[in-house]
Length: 199
Image 1 (tube, rainbow, N blue to C red):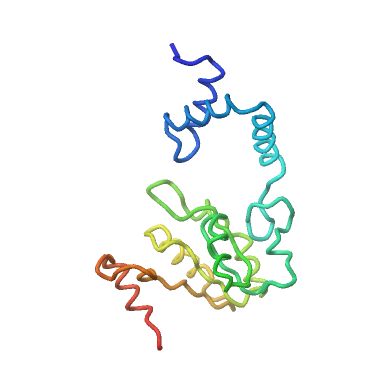
Image 2: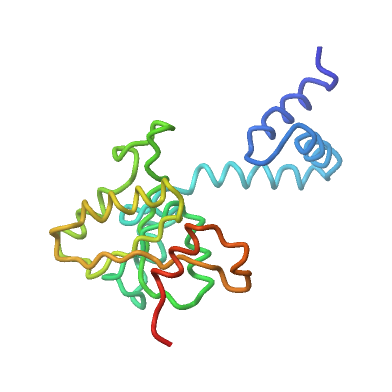
């Protein structure tokens, strides 16, 4: 038998489904919502409902958006011929923070991971390939994470785009700024040495 009334137990169980929220955090959140004014709880519920009702994937790049095409794909000031391929929509914010990229994006919504049953058919690559085949892209930047899955995905995409009239590049990886070389693993140090440039 549950220690909590059924509505509280149900809310705790739903909150536990969120990433990074364990049983204790779910209980804290549920009690916070219970103690909050009814208007705050309604605002939270409305925000979740609106999120599910209004957001969709951009028909060009697969970014999560409330307008189609998204703000990047429809922007007249961005270089539509330069496409940065990323794993998840959250990666866009990281790249945008640099203020040095003015192209558009293509979101895969994952990486190749045979161990987890994720094959090429699970990645959203169709519109990227179609744009490259139509000659609408000059360069594709592969900005997948430098993990085993990210590297496999980058290799797969590079091979898929080979033979098309598009330049395919990979983001540089290596020792992060502000860190100590002493703590870099061998893969990171190898990438740093391979990616060296003139100064």
